[in-house]
Image (cartoon, rainbow, N blue to C red; front, side, top):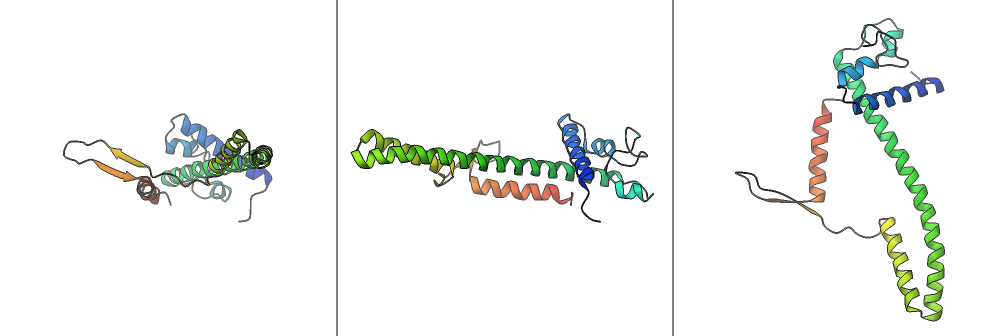
Length: 182
């Protein structure tokens, strides 16, 4: 199966947007899967959703997807749509960061010239502030160690966890949770 044509890609994008909207509205995964199914026999609206789940099977006259397959397809769609949105936001942030770096370059040039030429202490301070802003914006400063402390519960002891350890634990939990989706 090749890459979908432009119309099919637009329909898939719409399906993913609809899946997110349904989940945001509190609709469970199976209902999302049924609502966006291609086969009217399983579609909750009894219509063929364009580029819906199981479209290839429907076009070939095969059995519609099972409930588990519909749930898996809906989960996969939402994950993919969120990943695409995150990528788009990161690209826009990169573009804005580039513009801000150009602005900081101009401001720094003026402050630096005054600081070096005249030994102007306020200009030196301003140049340093611009440098600090650039370092923060571009992630040049090494982050300080962050610890998260959980309150004790009955029968447990107080635990301090470094941020990287917490992220590793979360990653392991997410992998375990999504392991059944794949």
